[in-house]
Image (cartoon, rainbow, N blue to C red; front, side, top):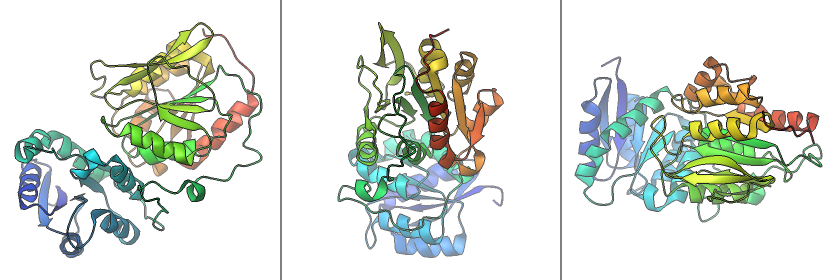
Length: 368
């Protein structure tokens, strides 16, 4: 047991507590060491049992799950996987949990909870494994939020810097970002530091259907660039960021003198839909040396091979460093594939992009 991942389950439903405990205990590398019906009981279990990971519901008696998560990440930071029905119909609540420091989330089925949870067993246990390896950080103070759960844009958005403006910049340049576990907040950190005249940004964040629209709206409230879910066939414009909709692949194509977004259904690539591989492959093929690639925190290897293809086509590629990643899997694989020109802490990625763009402002080159 000393070598197993120790998990505490926190959920007000006795049925769900039993099912999650059963799912966890069936795995050879993890065990459920405790199950709590509310956060106050969970608090004592965490003190006494010292788990590696907790699974946490949102809607519970005596203390709301988000309040508990906020206190936990300030006082005793540890990996948390949210498991709640609210995460499916209330994407804002899920994003708030990720903002507070939760590593990942799983949505409980609305009906047929027992069968549904068992079907999700592999997904749940994979996310628990990832969480056990995640790097979590202490929450300094509760983020200022609106009633909807998103941070207040006036207080959260950075003040424009006089050095931030890029001036007249070629519309040929496009920034491509790939991210997975921990990536919602990492992507936010990059985007809020881009000026209004930034090149277009295309983003694939591993996220299921139903969440990316709220995520885009939240980022749009925080950023100086406009952020939205990508729509098939729309023109890709400077000063805008386009997020792959959950359940669809995002890529870029050329239409005459313009770039356009392509949003398509299809088979998962590297087990993901949307897949970073699909987006980065199109960047290499269509944008070539006018592309800037950014690989952020995430589990697995999605996008690593395609990012190397981007570099071979002449792109400028940045990769997030291990110390600032929640999970170093995707960045590590990108580095191993030889895809990275530079490896930097998260806080330095946007400044480095701006520095490179200033040095290359107006320099548009035809695709190889």
